[in-house]
Length: 72
Image (cartoon, rainbow, N blue to C red):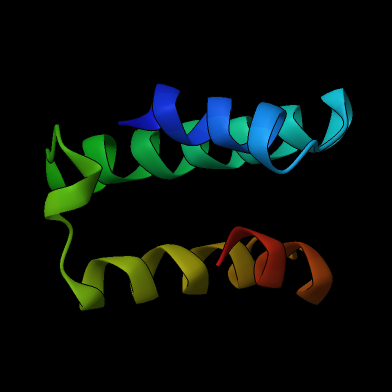
């Protein structure tokens, strides 16, 4: 599913390489967080509180608001 989304960004939306890489990195970080924190292998099975927890952890790590919005 992630591969299809990345292909969509590249070819349908014509995003730059850097933008696609940023999105891919964000999704990889999100997946790692879910795996490490909740032992969840499939990100699509995440519940809303898990997603909010990830966003809150980004803010606690002093991630800029603009970056958090992009990741959300």
